[in-house]
Amino acid sequence: MLGILGGGISGLSLAHLYEGASEVLEKEDRIGGHCRSHQKDGFWYDEGGHILFSRDEDVLRRMLAVLGDNVERRRRNNKIWYKGRFVKYPFENGLDALDKEDVFDCLYSYLNNDYPEPTNFKEWIYHTFGRGIAERYLVPYNEKIWKTSLHRMTTDWAGGRVPKPPAEDVIKSALGISTEGYTHQLYYYYPREGGFEALDRGEPPEPREQLGVVRHGPSPPGQPPAG
Image 1 (tube, rainbow, N blue to C red):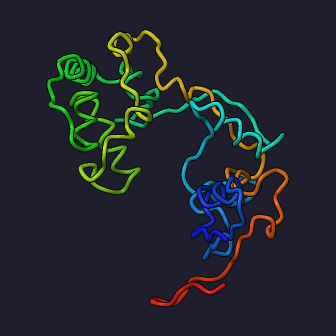
Image 2 (image 1 turned 90 degrees about the vertical axis):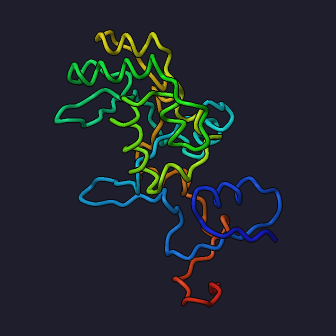
């Protein structure tokens, strides 16, 4: 028997894919972890922003299979609120919406970037995008998302998640010529009903005894969880 601590999306995925017997131990009264959703006044609200996309076709196929017919495909329409205006996402593809001084600084520092090889994520941002884009968007955005100093984060994951835009796209963006960045997530999938938590439950929802989830309240400090 494999014991799995935590009924978030990772724990549930492991239980689903593991060929042997397993049991998921979840201290909260609901599975899902940070992928849970809450309903209020007829609307579903996720804990954080979640969408479904992947460069790995097999991973994407597995996720969509869990949702069955309860899924929609949509085109991204994100905007960034900066200095009292909406800027196209990703930031480097919407430079023409900025003040001219900001456009110049972002473009110049991107094209004339001599930052040394990075040793952490914050240095990687400067090395990859230049000071202008880093300080106006990517550094404050990622500090808000990750809730930690970017100096403490490694860089091995960054290239696949935050791709470097080609110079011609950044130049076009500064001139107001439309471009698209992060094209691997330009189209994404999302559950039609039930919020992102629908991925945790499956469609139709799997019986809880089939998942092997043990539910219980938080344990007192210093004591092992009950269940």
